[in-house]
Length: 115
Length: 109
Image (tube, rainbow over all chains, first blue to last red; front, side, top):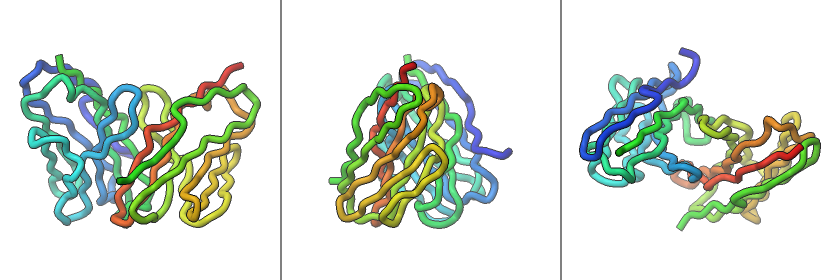
C-alpha cells in the first residue's frame, strides 16, 4: 500500500492475556519504529529496527514486551500477560534507510484496551 | 537527561497567527521535527530544521536556533482545521528521536 498500515485498529483484551500487534511499513523503508501514546500524552519510544542491524530495544518498558521484524518488512509487537497500564495507542512508523533525520511516516495506530 | 519542553495548551482565534515554542536539552543535535496530530489520528510530518533560521512552507513556518536550544512553529491565517496537537521532536547524537509531549492548539471562531 501507499502508507504504513497497522492491524488491528482496535483491540480489547482481558488482563493477563497476550496480544500481538502488526505493522506493515512503506515499501522500501528499512527503518521501523514502535511508539506508545497514552491518552493526552506524548509519544513514548519503544523499539527501533534498522535493516539487518540488531534492534534498539531501549524503550521497551518491561520484559513482557517484545517485537520482531521478519524479512526486513512486517513487524509484530507482542505484549505478554497484559496489564491495565498497557492500555494505550500503539503507533508504528517507518522511514527511508538513512539516519533518523529522515521523516517518519506513521500508521493509524492500534488502540489497545486492557480490561 | 534529555528534555523537550513545549506549552501544554494554547488558544488562538481563527484568522490570527500563533507561535508554538519548543526548547530542548539533548545529548547532541542532528535536527528537529515538527509534527501535527489531530485527535484520534497518527502524527503527520510538518517540517524539519537542521540549520539555524526560518523555513517557510505555506501558512506554516519553523524556526531554529541551535545555540539557544530553541525552535518555534509559526502558523498564520489560522483555520479551524488547524486545531490539533503539535509535536516537537529532536534527533540526538545517537540519531534517536526524542519527543516532546505536544502542544494542544485550540482555535476559536
